[in-house]
Length: 121
Image (cartoon, rainbow, N blue to C red; front, side, top):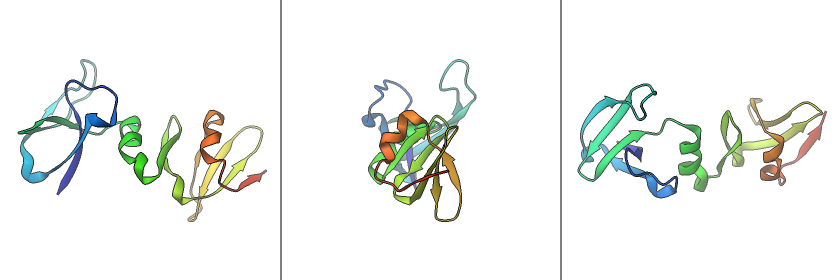
């Protein structure tokens, strides 16, 4: 089984902070606090470092970017390849998917979906 983790120490905010490793590389897993005021999370101890599971949207956005994912709002990371249309009115903007589900898009991120068909409501 493969895991993707983020360095426990010495992070720079770059893609190099993330590492994919096999279960065979894990020596043990403990519960630890990534920051002084956070909840405990699994911490993977390997021979080449200590890694937390990715527990933030920002972290997921970084590792999934090459697969077509991006943050479109503060509450989501979206697969741009699966959006079928953008619905916009004066009060909201939503990205819609083939199954009818949808999520929000902040107006400051509209430039990320300029290539997708729009429907004005």
